Length: 356
Image 1 (tube, rainbow, N blue to C red):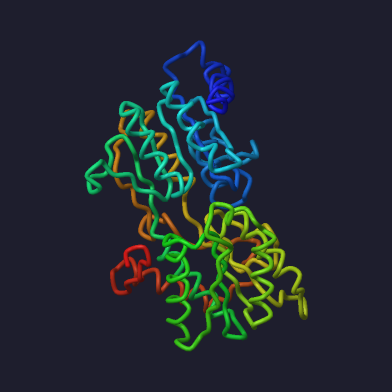
Image 2: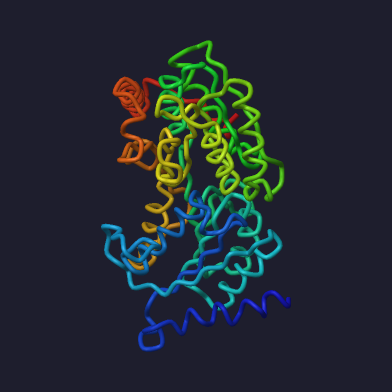
């Protein structure tokens, strides 16, 4: 209760943002991050970019245009720090009848299920989670479930990894050992084995609790161990913990002006985090999904239930830019694009580990 009261002034401050008092019709949006925080340069950062684009038309740096118009919303965010702080934060927004409350990450699902039931007239959105009615089958009407076909994008970076690897040993570092992250791992493995059926994929996870998303030291330790076993490309799907894999490949150094080991980023474009050491990034357009659901609220078109983002429509994919253009071979890109076409056409079916 004390935390709820402590958060109340913070949420109240959003209603007093410039222009809000003069125009009470402005849509109020609250977002609750997971414990990795909005500056994790990955999953949370992508969600933050989406709401900032909706608020200002610019990315969080305040200088880079989103290429989309601002929606004139009033925005407030909470970085809980600990899992126990999530529900009070969410309830604080709901108590003030915010027009949309966004929860970042599947772990907020059980919390949002309860809060959304207590506030049926408040609209919610959850990223990577699905909220059902009490029957356990019908998607909840006041919750938009923003979900992604991560296994499809992971397949493509698996192809690129296998085409790039000299040792034919790859690594995968996951955050929390859950079906969602195993979906990344399985897609990555299948993509790599479409290139070389005998390729080796070493798979490790940081932990089994929420803390697994925010432990870059452990992420580095696991990555160094994989490098010691021969892995020369490591896909890190571990939130803030994944940054440890970036440090590990950088520590492995260069040879003849080229990185000896590479990392593959996740969720956001992380190619520029350690230029020259990031082979590519498997992006989830969390930013687009968040912006779009805010826009639906602003336009009066909000609907609960599933909102699915996959290869078709560029909801997931990989990035080639100025940071990695010289690292990814034309052959690897061609193979990945051929796989993309076949997946979209239904000629390749990537295993969904969450459905197993």
